[in-house]
Length: 112
Length: 114
Image (tube, rainbow over all chains, first blue to last red; front, side, top):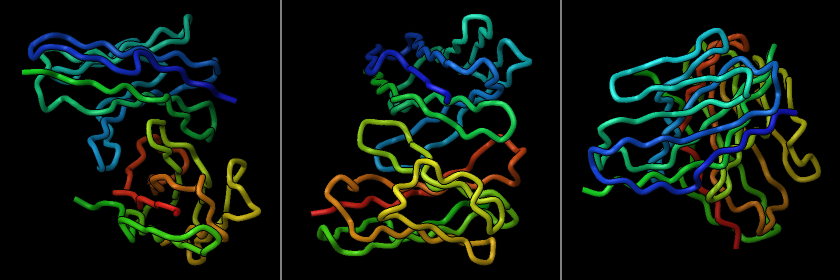
């Protein structure tokens, strides 16, 4: 089955800096890669996603890149703000109706 | 904006007791998922429903866990008997249909087994 690895497990940046979180997946048939933000005690919220027919997607300060050959995808947050502090999860979904498999999460701390 | 509802939000139970969680997906969503999230880890799928039918329960510990979605709308996840290792956040999510990608999560039920 699908296996997703996520790095780093923690990331501390200064306000205004950029943050990059990386994930790798094992199933070459995976075709959907969402990123979720989870604040303490709250539900995971989808912040951006990318499908396998696209190499990059951007939404304001957030972007995701996908390298299908290397089977890795990354989340880029520019101009970080303290409210970006949270745990971020990547996930991958296999072909057909395969389930979402989540990474282990990255705790991002943005210091003012 | 419609949201997935879950109750209770918090549950403390003693080991060997029975516990149940309830989920009401977004109206019209045919696919419902139950996840378990252990502290410090990502959510792990326990069971997936398409309408009232189970389509994936490969990771559900069936000796103690059960799930149902009798009318294809709301769903109940039960643990009997609860064990200390069951302490976790139980999340419910839904999508419009199996072919849809974006999953909408509920607020979760935080279970503590003592």
